[in-house]
Amino acid sequence: MMRRLAVLLAGAALVVPGTAAAARFAVGVAPGGDPEALAAKLEARTGGTASVIGPFAVALSAPTARGVAGTSGVAYVERLTTGRRLAFTPTDPLYPRQWYLPAVRAFDAWAQRPTWPGMLVAVIDSGVDRTHPELAGRIAAGKSFVGGSPWRDTKGHGTFVAGLMAARLDNGEGIAGLAFPAQLLVAKVVRSDGVVPLEAEARAIRWAADRGARVINLSLGGIRDPLDPEHDSFSALEADAVAYAVKKGAVVVAAVGNGDQAPEQPWRYASYPAALPHVLGVSAMGRDGSVPAFSNRDVLYNDIAAPGDELVSTLPRGLTALRPTCLAQGYSDCGPVDFRNPQGTSFAAAIVSASAVLVWNEWPALDAEQVIGLIERSALDMTPANGCRRCTENRDPLTGWGRLDVLRAIQWNGALPAKDKYETNDDAGARAKRLGRRKSLVASLDYWNDQNDVYAVRVRKGRRLRLRLKGLNGIRSDLNLAVWRPGTRRVDHHRSVHQLISHKSGPGASERLVFRAPRTGLYYVQVKISTPGAGQYQLKLAR
Image (cartoon, rainbow, N blue to C red; front, side, top):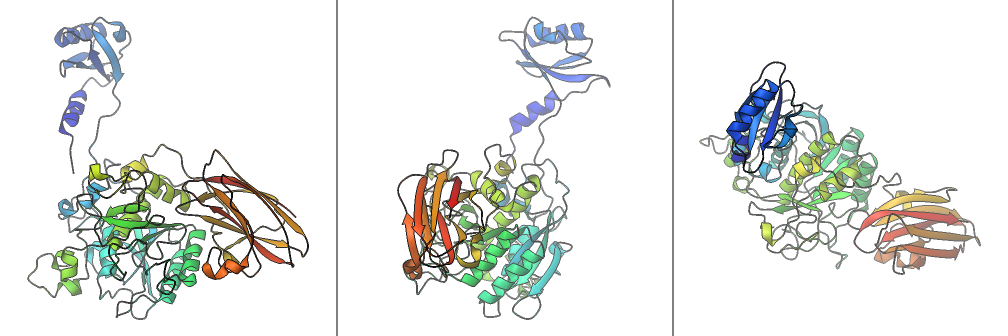
């Protein structure tokens, strides 16, 4: 971890001993002044003790500094209440190899590790070796959705992810887990052949949400190809499970994918479930700030980048025992070849999930959507100047909003996303929010995380529905209105085009639409954000 030696030395020199009743002050020396003469003058005036700490300042320990500011040769008087402190550094022996923790400023916000109650974090993966010493006391519950035991991890992937997130900290052994307050919910969804059945994944997501998971990590994915519907792996079952977890209040984090099953690399589309609304999609970056070719790109669904190369973490000791002469048993150095220099957006996603735990503990009043927004807004923009040659300023397809920055998120003093009580109303059918007799509402949209809000409105045959949409708080994005027929299952889908009954898509953030219902039924009103931006809107309805 980098240390700013000059600052620390100056800070230490300012903290000088004094009498029990004394306060501590730093007194600036006026330009051209004599610090030795000023120190003697301050002692005579205050009855305290003063010492020179350089040509520009004198440290004063005195009961009061009243009247000092007007003394000849004084540039300023500053009361010292605290000194600078180092961020805490774990004692785990492999910590110096965990370059990715300082890279995201994982522990820089605290001088010593805070003591927080355990936050439940779901690892939906290949299982976890719970007998690993690094994970002792870090697992709350587990369940397998593909048969067998959740504690048998023959692939190693789940245990590696679990270690990045929750390996015991400061235990003098192995690595340091990033999410030191986390308690893991382990859901095994990977079969022995390496396949993740969609049914198993969906059941696991709902199980984790019902058990109270605040963060759900999905280091898995399926190909997305909007130009080839036959190749695209969208699953309504998966989308509904993710929406259920989000509705329950969980932050859902997913890898954008490695492109190993894509038609080409780098692949220009994020995988599912990263390409679903409200999911924080994570790409990988290397130690030098570049984005490796395996990491999928995406204009919309790649939200943030995190370290995904040259990592070290835990592995089931059954796997590392295959190299008995290796000293680091239970760690990736002793694992199969694929784990000795592991790469992948899977691991980048785990680092972001762990960071979400730390950020949420510091911002407990925020909801999940706001935590995601905070993590995105506080990211460090990646450009050629800081290592990403193909990145552009502001949001780009390679790194989204930029590199994860835990310290900046925790110390954030900018605007936060507004809460939206109607989510997750992202599609027609059961996902739409039924309005009843409501005549007006205020909600929000985000071009990258939440493009559509859909409301179900019952209209009788022959009746008119009048809609008025207006952007609030100076939103400059293009907002559009549409009405879909009863029975629509997905808006904006190529198979649903014939269900669209009316739409308004003029420029700007205001629209009006009137239509007459051809039959009685539950119609779907879609509010869509069509250009980059985010913000609130008001929707008024009259029937």
